Length: 115
Length: 114
Image 1 (cartoon, one colour):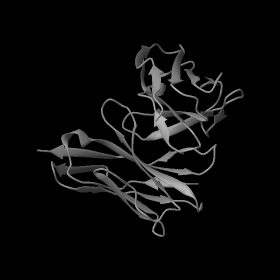
Image 2: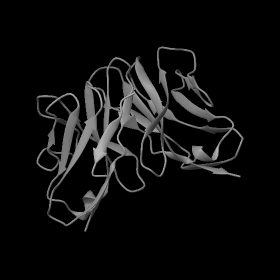
Image 3: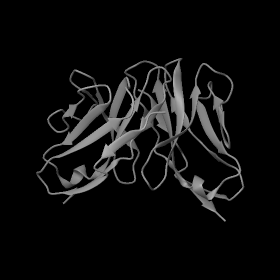
Image 4: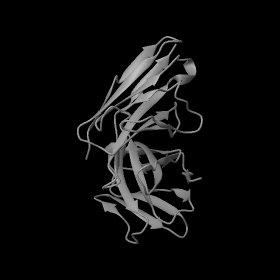
């Protein structure tokens, strides 16, 4: 069974600084997708970034980028130039390819952004 | 991206009653899922809502407790039956398309059972 582990329950970063959130996963599949979702107090799950396992290049979306290490089964999220609006719960998620595949989530990291 | 409307956004219910949560997507999607997020916890998949057939439930979830309908490619409902305080959670609908493999979420239903 696939598992996703986020070892940092809480993180804090100062505004305009950079922070990295860690995620590791376990799978026997060779092809899959990895995601980072953001959940602010509004409860809305917002897709931040997605990485296809077959791509070696790390995904980037504006201030958000990932460090994908397939051999190590590691998928960290880097947030640059942190903003107050980045404060939220961040969930790492895994999904195998295929129409019936589901998302498996990690336990989440609560990110605080301070002035 | 798909826009997902979920209602009600929150409700307070009495023990033993049932609540039906609706999920409407603004475009046809291949996949729809229902998740539960217990207080302070991560998301757990309840079931996959299959269009035109019975839902596929995950271990620990049964149809009698969480009946699901999906009459078409844009709409699904989840019913939480015979509720108890342990059912107090956020319930989230998600939907996506196999073409881009992205899944999007509704804003959730905050359920409190007294």
